Image (cartoon, rainbow, N blue to C red; front, top):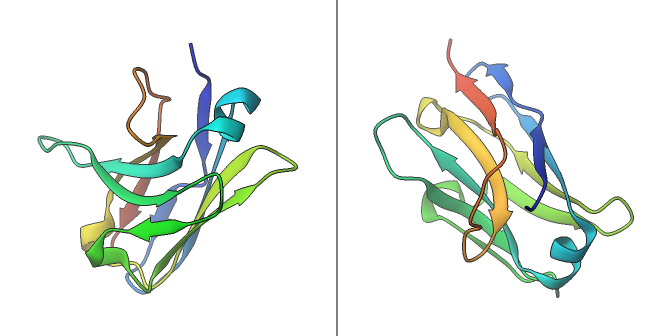
Length: 114
């Protein structure tokens, strides 16, 4: 079973920033496209940002220009820098492979509220 451990969520005001981080198995990290997903209660999990092993990135339209995904090869981490957050970004955020994994970590909750 793939280990995925997310961190960095929290409560932030609109316009604020957060940096999410995910540690995963070295093998998966080195061989798979990785992504950050988010889920709001009652809705399907959606891919927010993805990054290939070669560093190519793609983003959901609503986060383009605000979110930046990156890989840290030394620490086998996938990071998500989130700026200019708005209430619509509130969700539980998960990291995982792209396509999605069979199992997920616990996620990290982001709450954007004034």
